[in-house]
Image (tube, rainbow, N blue to C red; front, side, top):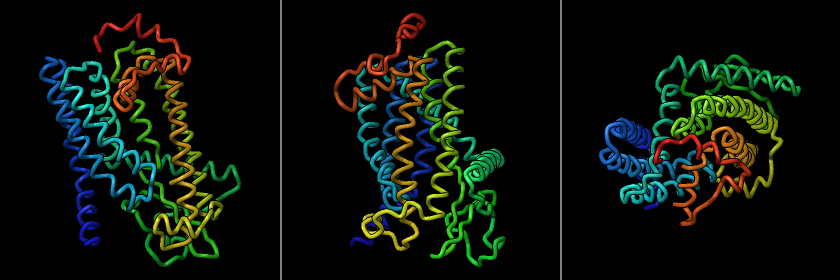
Length: 328
């Protein structure tokens, strides 16, 4: 029975990508319709949000089990009811949710080209790999960077590697050979897409939008390199080998070497990433305070209470009030 349930949940997770693409197409259609008439766009946005909820639902099992990430899994669990709530409230006429609804497909448009266009993906992955290797060398670590383990005399495959240009850092330990591969998820692109989507979705002067992005995108990129260095070195040299028995039991690990990876990436780095995004958001809203509006909408839907982020973050909301010409 449990094996059947596990198989069903795993199979459902396999539909995440096509569901995500379908949701993106529906959201983009709604954005176009919004230029014609809000009444038409509203219902299409509602369908998009329902599909978005199904998308996150399909990711819960992969995030918790395959990725071994409690933070991503919890985020997916929260995203399902929140997406359905947005659909419900938007259908009831809350127009302030249109900015948030526009942000979702814009995030997708930033991320999608790097997934669909292999040469573009390759350039980004190789750029991040090169900067990660350079940063590791600055702190005194020089692991080999390979495309195949045969390059360093090891006769086995690199797990989780899909494309040849996804280069791998190799670490040699007493317990075996440890590999750390840079893939698209290691580039910071997801965080960049979130910020870019939010900034482009709101009504604000182009100059302030560009200033906000000029601050956020480089900061995300640099912090992501720091993250890669931390995870690679901590995992490769087993510096984060904390509570091995409890960690192996909780995450159902079959290799004790994975303990350091779980702590370095899934616990410490992902927690730090959430904190970093809050700080980056604060930097962005100082240039584009309008970005607070869709975030306040999310907080309202999640808690049922109105929030004043301008007061909480000590940011002047005046530019948004003076320059905005939209009912959003």
